Image (cartoon, rainbow, N blue to C red; front, side):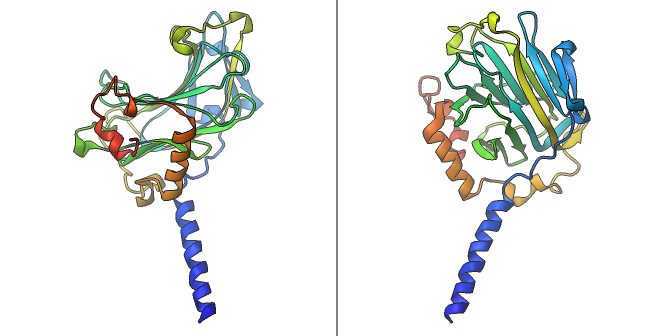
Length: 294
């Protein structure tokens, strides 16, 4: 009887582990830049390394640069490994985001705001729906993002958008259409990244300006992973919806372990959350309650 009970406990623990593992995003596949992306501007400010398996974006006093995905996607898992501008990066912004192409656009943003030497990077996330944003959250990272590559990814399906840093969820935006909150579900998006000068707002609200004597500023990238449902810009839905791994039931919400990790980020590293900004939002935005942000 004792051995049978012990076996039940072991099986239970294995099931708990399997559930936790099942809800983690699949490991991205390393592919070269040219597989999924093309430059968009200032082509001469993109440097190709190891045959394009890695690239560098270069910002100087003349221009920054950027790139975009070849395809447009409706839902999926999108990931990039990045090493941010080292040293004095005040005034610079390195962006990794998804965006649709019309006036009432949808957008899912990572923005990495540079800082003076020795001060931590700030990661700002935002979600636009129907052309409306104003949903900023800002965190400090728990590591130096300039010394090694780290993974930044977005999981997007009909139920939620999750921002991950090294597979740690730092933000979730749930589908709250039943509360009257718009959710990105019918506009395909391209994936973009850019490095540019934004010293009118990026660092301490524009008080810290870009020190061009430190130029060129360089952000490095590798592992140009896209696992999404490719769609034309006219598409209203994804033909494979419900058939891909990121559409399955276990990805409709975070699991308990992921919520604990998210709570850890919120309690230790969050420096701004629009959900708790009563000066901007005297009434709590409805999605914040469903996102467990308040």
